[in-house]
Amino acid sequence: MTGAIAVQRLLELRVARANERWARDRGAQEYGQGHYPLFFVLHPAWMLALLLEGRAATGRVNLWALLLFVLAQPLRMWVIRSLGRYWNTRILIIPGGKRLTHGPFRYLKHPNYAVVALELATAPLAVGAGRTALAFSVLNAALLMLIRIPAEERALAAYRNQS
Image 1 (cartoon, rainbow, N blue to C red):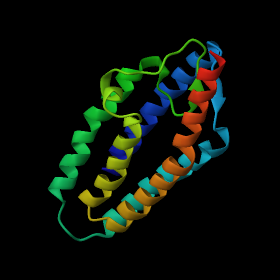
Image 2: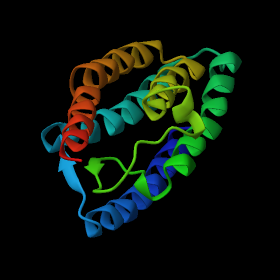
Image 3: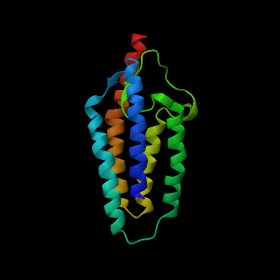
Image 4: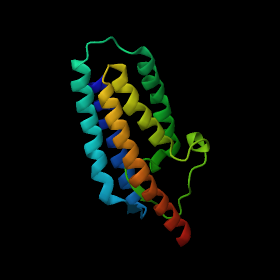
């Protein structure tokens, strides 16, 4: 499971990098650069903890958690497809861009973060890695609620004030 997640994340990073180049070519301004490395520590550390604790667990696979993890994948793709070229892993504001209100953004302000939160909890729970699920869910929530989402909201507010 961890290998498949790692491959998925690496492929997504390629898309994110291409989209980042596209956005920067259109004059995108980046916000929140200081906290960006925290996510590049969090996610690989989560995968490593998932692998190690999951291998040490002797229980059976939790099918409900696995099902929720699998169901999160189309939601992840829906977010990425809805954002199109605007999807990347950084906070980039492109002049003339508009905030999305279609796709999953009709229902949630930050749907990608909801999907990631679901994944960070359910993948470990599926393989009996409860400590990993709890620890990384709390760390992710703290990063999102205290740092990332406020940075995004400040960036959007600054952009609206410039327009």
